[in-house]
Length: 92
Image 1 (tube, helix red, strand yellow):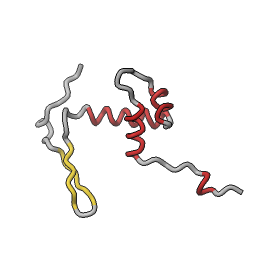
Image 2 (cartoon, one colour):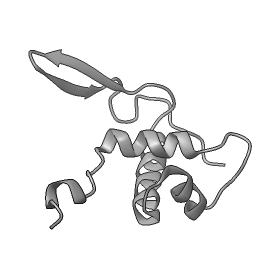
Image 3 (cartoon, rainbow, N blue to C red):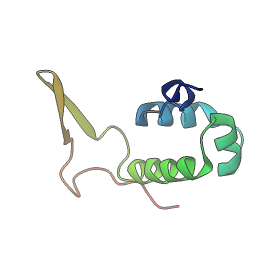
Image 4 (tube, rainbow, N blue to C red):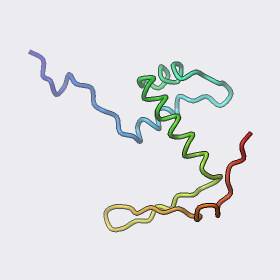
């Protein structure tokens, strides 16, 4: 009988997923989601959702906009610019 704890796949963290997608993206090629998924070892639906989220976040502003502040054992977060106060990404 197979041990269920060792036969189950370990679920990847959000950081591991983003890193796998980042590593699978090429700089001089445009690849479909299925190719990026195969290269990253992730399900294409997961890759598609994360790429949409990453693109949405990147589209908010140019440059660094998130402030990460240590608060004891954890972190607190804020934006560097008030709404409308940052430089918006130009639509192309």
